[in-house]
Image 1 (spheres, rainbow, N blue to C red):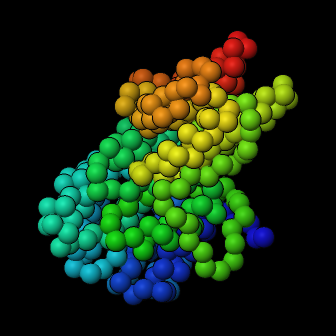
Image 2 (spheres, one colour):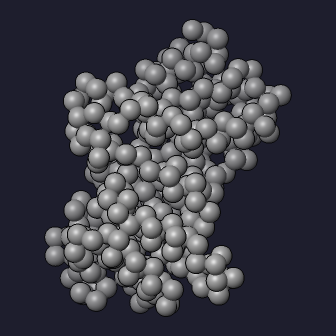
Length: 326
């Protein structure tokens, strides 16, 4: 099977859907003439023209609102935020308009819109450009929130998101755009809200999503050298969450460690841990542990970034603790 970059998988998804459906268009800062800040939309202006690949001013609230209005009137916008840190400027449109119009209109209006772009840390970008927003948007009814970890999932899930009749938050990472992975040729979709067991195992369940899945793999490889067999579950979607896959895994392994880059308070790990203890309490041989980002704004210095972020060493330590080996 061919291997392509994460950014190429996203580009293929958008381009295929724009060829299939003339109501789909892309709008955001630098998506057209500059080919995208991270070259995700490279070449799309040449193919689809200025009416469907649209450069905007630096005005997230404005172009997010235009997208919501367009979606309410029969179009299917893809709104790119250069980073979800900038989506804070537009959050009123995302939460109070896109997410609520269907309910407020008694189902008379749908808002088929995708808000996509990178989230969380990406090197030395400091506090205002490194926040993980998955749990922020997952907290809001009316939104679906997707956080893929590899090019194959990214393409299939983005195509499904574009075809969805309700608003979808699609979160990526600057540090993943160059990642290569196997992606099938031709048409395929992936269902929203279905987790994937990336690595089967029998001793402990490690749950994560997005780019931190790569860190979970590193930890699992090291644990395997000590004959500890870790199962890795990639949620892929954090609203809705596939609780059933996680709970069935915990019933088998009897232990769970959740890894997430977000701050520790009120994150996705907290929600999943609650569900596991409620639905699979009798199967747990140890309390659920979380490995999260630090409870501080992310610093600029590389040494402090390393101390803040989840890493393989911290995951291994948590696994050994739930197995009573540490």
